[in-house]
Length: 485
Image 1 (cartoon, rainbow, N blue to C red):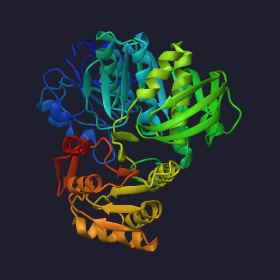
Image 2 (tube, one colour):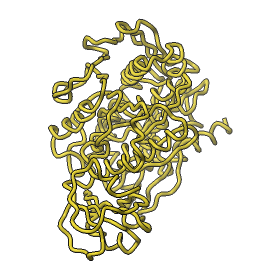
Image 3 (cartoon, helix red, strand yellow):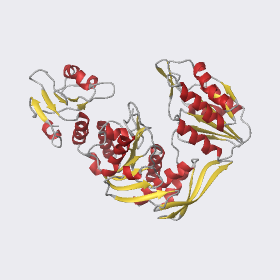
Image 4 (cartoon, helix red, strand yellow):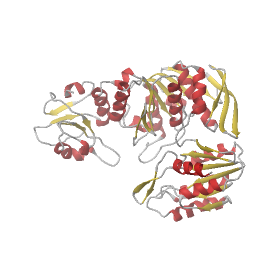
């Protein structure tokens, strides 16, 4: 594409060179630059792309986009912009010919629930023969394609590239996790969302490498709703006034506790021989009963949100019910095994709040025993491990402490820290360092009515040990156990 065309929606200054250039591709990693690429120098938390301009030129860059004053040879085109991340977003949209304009785009933001809610929405739409792609923490998914990503919301180039690939593959709708970090780093700049959705908000993601303050965090969330044609909000959430500041889009609400357009009148927690999940009845906008194969009241919130989105998109109600009954999200309250004797559940919870909510929720299902298998991450604060032992130990009938990304620490030392918290609440525990063996032990020695909880790994498929990631997938262990039962 012609460079001048690419720049038409960008505030820029031509420092030197010509705009009459044919650009092969856009690159923001100097190592990936090839002949006639446009290199955009991004400034990150740990690296500054301006330090690699010469590398980009050596690899064949024909032009550079920068935000600093630089001194380079006269025969190179240099474009200066106020913010290179913002420029990358608009350049990417132009390069892929604005694919989001031909897609129905649903953005889901919130402190928790984004992954589960986006999967529920996608499953419902797919069940209704609406071709829907997904972008989020478990990757980019459309048709049979699954593309790994490093961030909940990928860099703007990857977002627009995915939009274009989806559109070319016949996809009409995209549901995506819209993280506050993505708005802070302008990864979603220039995108207008057909529906902007809020799952919930708490005080989170404040600190080094994330958000400087609660005000900044809420301001970033606010950007989704300022750029949405219509919005759907959890009316039980905190900070609604701040996150909806200056938002004038048409609003619909759902809630369990506060008045809303869609409310819940009754919730049943179901722990049956062949089922673990929740049934709930709605009132208001929809008067009906739904059943989900995912435990917990917080999954009722996620399901309400998904139902409301799909109602807006005029999906058949029966299709909604059928999809919600079978929806599974990898590593998020995932029922991995159900036998007449015991059940196994996998969850990604790895923060103190997440683990507290997880074990408290599962206790509400009144298992005869809650057996929790977990470890602590290496090179992390000891205080976190003490609290981990106290939180999970206090709610479990048996704890099996094991490996969970020990990194550069000894597993035994990590588990010794966890034991401080376990002992504080007089928890019953054993230690099995090999996580696969810990899972097998729990299943082969299960008692009638056990609920076995695998905490912390979720969808991860590795153990990080001394700088190397070794393949490890809890579902492989579960499948081996299934064969031997």
